[in-house]
Length: 266
Length: 270
Image (cartoon, rainbow over all chains, first blue to last red; front, side, top):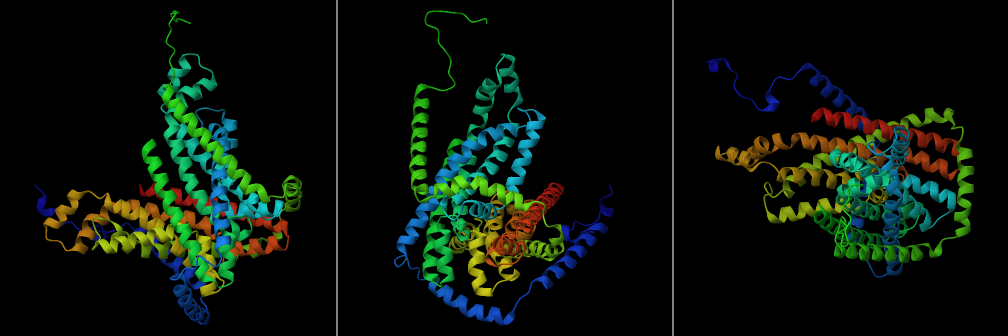
């Protein structure tokens, strides 16, 4: 036995490392140094900010729901309604694109076109899309609604397309062997298999859409964001705190509900 | 078709009548709610503006082309700042998320109250959008990249913390018990039983969040928190759409490159 010649066991961080790991570590540290030196920190400003943040914190601990209640209620309601409409419309519009973005159901040309559109749409943050819509049609909830619809299509299209691609090929073969048309193939081989994922992803997107709807108002695209942004700019931090608490509460409820739905369908 | 025809032929359907009834009812309710919501949301919409949007959009696109490539040198520093904000924000969040996750995981938390506090931090951080964090922090720290870094830090703590504490809770009981049986302290238990099992997933989570943070750091500038978003805002406000299109293209390239890099790194870890 060669037990005596075996080196003692050492935890991972005490073992010898290949040379390139040191190189990566050195590069990371160098980068970090440059990144940190690029961040301008105005010490005097931060000190003033520290005072402000104390005031901010004390006001946050005493949220004021009452004095701007009408604006808060309208904003929250608008955010919620935008979320409902955008999710339903977006999901419906995403279905054909998802079918097109599944390699096992479509022609490569359509597949690549759909995938390219989805990738580009997904790369732009919601706020940036919202700005463009606001420039196109002016302020208001409709610009925000379109933004959320576009973002929903991009999200559902990608995830649903991937879900369709992971469908068991045996069932597709079986249905195809009966001489089924393309529609029948989708109806009897694909739909039953992806339904749980579809519902799960849609409910998840509902959750995300509400979170996104809370910021669209900052660029003038409707929802609670406008109220929040105004209250911060007026230093009405007690109102901001009330809005934030409501947002956190609603997100919690939505997350719980969406978790429950996803657990039930899967 | 080889079907046997008979008087009382039983036709097969994928679901029972009751199932279909329930589904149809749910669908009708959903559509009704959507329709009502649509009416309420759009009651203040100026439809003439919406009808005009395609025309405006066409003019917008026309003014975007050709992109003002001569402007690109001015974009380089803000783009680098954007990457810095994302990286430092992810790093800051990682440092905070580790103790928060250890406090939130059932098998490592020192006390129930600590667990409740850690879960609250995770929920609060995740529910508030990074643009809102940035909005508040710009008022605290002043405009600039620092506010952006802190905003992404506060936002990412919840994400990294949640995924990490779930990974910690899934750690194999047996290996924790084995380490415990040697008389290991609480810290040694974490270092020798939990770290080795969660490290790959943890690194994957951090890289994934970095990818998301690149995307988010592109718009933090809209409220003054540094990065490329500041230029986007300035140029949209001054209607310089040839520059806007250049900025949009550079955001697209940056986001796609970050996604590619993060995916490569994540698949290398696995």
